[in-house]
Image (cartoon, rainbow, N blue to C red; front, top):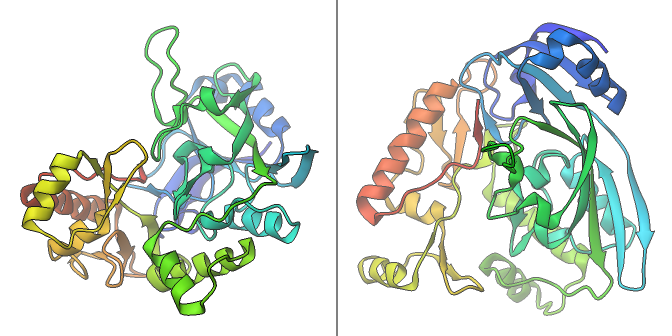
Length: 350
């Protein structure tokens, strides 16, 4: 185990914000975590788990010990009559996992292609796109308790998945509290990919692709290619323009609330959920308030997709976390004043 002091983090957060870790340890094996836990000083202090850095806003230097997850490996762990169960180490790229499963003939993750970040972060956020969420394909995960050093496993119910939510995003309350925020490092994640695969095509962008191509029953790889093309057309590449992907969650409202908004804004983009609630497109709400292309310092709303905030200063003159959050709060106020909807940020603010 090597503890690296004053470690620069600009290259390890997709916004490209300048900050440093007071101390950083690269986790390339479980033994590295155990070495941290065996050190009295490191074990006692707070810790921050860093994956791909694609879903966070750094507002200053990171004082807790940064555990940078670099665990690698992907494999098929089980095949039954009904499904393939695949496993990926937490440090693997999420998109690389999606492509690997399809290359091996194991469909199911294609709608979530090109989501940035690491495999280990995927259950924390319960990532999702185009009608599929991680919880729909999740089997189980392994993790290390950062208070005891013990390893443990969780199934889907124990992860308490919600919309862009999980047990890993909540603080523990009381001796029996279930929150694992800041208390666990995920090492491996397993997915159950059913053999009776059916395409999930209920989103307008995918319906447009079917109409454009004349393909009504696309293969998993065709859906993968469509999703990649859609995302590349709408979302900036973090390697070119710093960003953290979708900055706000799509809010959900009741039918009555939606009817009230439609009465004032008939063009509002919305989707009916299985439980009868309505999901509104946060990007549409932000765009309707006139935010597309607006900026606070070097933080700006992306000109092609209002749901994305970007670092318009590049790596040489980057935005600050403070500029990003000032812009985000101004957008939240604007949307609330017009629609009565409170937008909730997706990224972790550090």
